[in-house]
Length: 232
Image 1: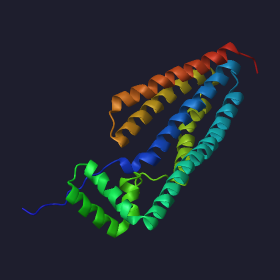
Image 2: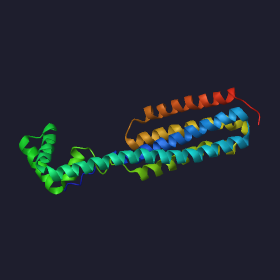
Image 3: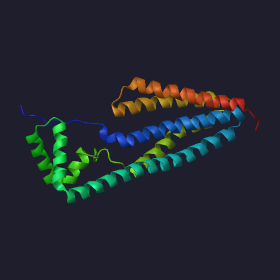
Image 4: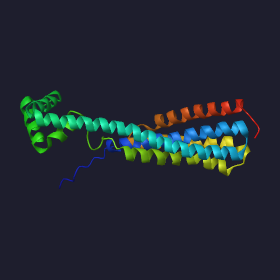
């Protein structure tokens, strides 16, 4: 029988945007729901609840985008600086750089002769790419992408924050607290499961972890709102 092509679908290429997207959505649900619950238990005013929710959505999405962009840009700057240094070293001392690459492969289990052949062939093809991948652990799949991370964070935060805002909008003020609480917990659980599935991790522990801390955070926010109860 003819052999079919072997195809493997690895998840490491999703790591950058997946982390930003899951973090943004979780933060959007949790921070906006907590804000709404705090205001709802303090004021019992539908207008105040909605203003707080929409403000939290807008401010949070912009903050997530800016923070993620700055953070990932810093990582990108480090990668670029390391690549520039490696490029200079290859130009100035190619012999030692070849030896360095060979020693890396020896430490990974290759014989000295085979390591020398691999190092020579990879250097002949693309020396900088070989050193970036095997010496610096920088590859196409894992390199920093600031704009992509910022957009994913802002979009996912907004999507997550929309859930408690809509929940508060659609029910009478008397039902706002339990509705926001329940809808947010369900969304957090789904996000935990989705993130675990996409990343190949066990679903139950991830879902339980996200849900538990969601309960704690929203309960604390609601409790603080109750302590500072005012009439509006």
